[in-house]
Image (cartoon, rainbow, N blue to C red; front, side):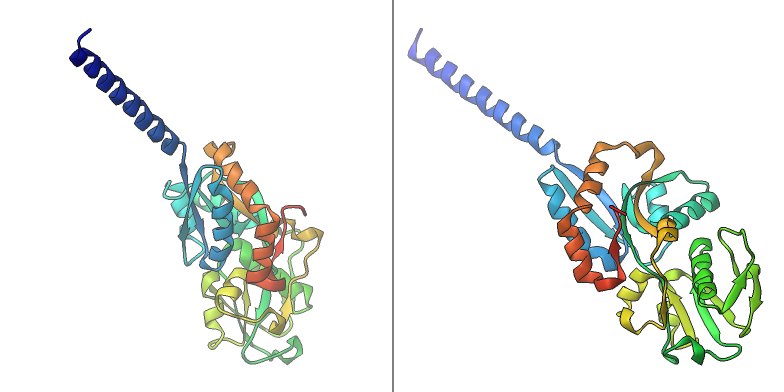
Length: 272
């Protein structure tokens, strides 16, 4: 074999090896999967920890923030995000029924007690006749708000109704007037009403101090439907990558960050 042929063979082998190396490199990059998660802004720091947790699993977690309680499920149903994490079970059930969707829970996150806040009073006994109260306008959180008032003796609701609305108020001693708003807007209404019932993450976004709440929902066995969940489309309920994200959320590192972000106003609930 001539020197030129030997040289040509060496060059060919070198290029072949390089080509295989490049293909192998591309293959390893292809193993990285991007998962888009829709959240409320108040949870951003928590999901940074989750993102770090799943990186070693070959998952690139892309966080998409939404400023209300409707967009995350719309985005999920339309495939704009893969999972979302901001709602409790009752909210999800109501959403599916109203929008004819089939979104499902794939894991628990936290429970955030709902509280009544006010810029005008510091205790319930100071509420006057005809006081204006802002409450969330979605069926599940409206029911939760009214049940909070009932638990504190301000209302009586029709018995046997799982998700009561203002139409189910059968006794209203103070003739309270209700203003229904998107849950994300309740905290902003505090200057215009006597009090507002606010979800935990909305209160956190608004920098409301939980220790200054007029009254706060008690967490007990009846709180199960109010535990927040990670949600996806039904067809993806067994998706192994999404389950890895759930597992990465349900860790001590994330629980520590939840405590840092929310203090006592959010409780890790995946073991409850």
